[in-house]
Image 1 (cartoon, helix red, strand yellow):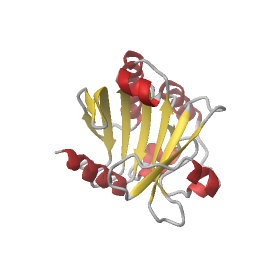
Image 2: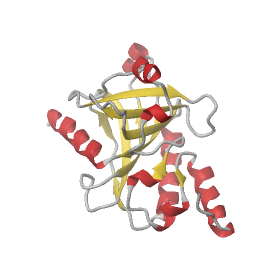
Image 3: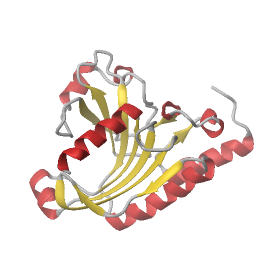
Length: 210
């Protein structure tokens, strides 16, 4: 591992503690042009999920979050983590190497108002270290899967648009009472790192509703 100097280590800890979500290596400070340089619970885009979980553990919690089933999702709960209550990840259907295309750290339950406060802290800390990232501040809107919900997303990406490189997404979700009662889902703060391929996949699914 690259040695981290004292001043860099202090800055690192500031981001780690304030954001409670992202772990940056020293290389990320100086050469943040690749989404694989970021980690959530030690997991990076391009890693194999088999480095962290068994095949049976992955398949036990397998499901499809999007209508187009090119990718599937799985998850695990992080009872020993100081940062998240769960981690979700996405793998391309049929990939025998179980390569991670998207990784999502979740904090839940959390009130929508508290989530938005934390989201602002995370945004500020990311831009303090990586001021050249392109930022898209989304507006509050319903989730496509829950029309009575509220969702707000901030996106950070490395190239000119969301679709020509990897991205970091900070999301606050306020579930509708109906969904909370029907599916036992709760409000959450999500920190997501996506590959370029997965960003394009998200767009394909979003266009189904247009």
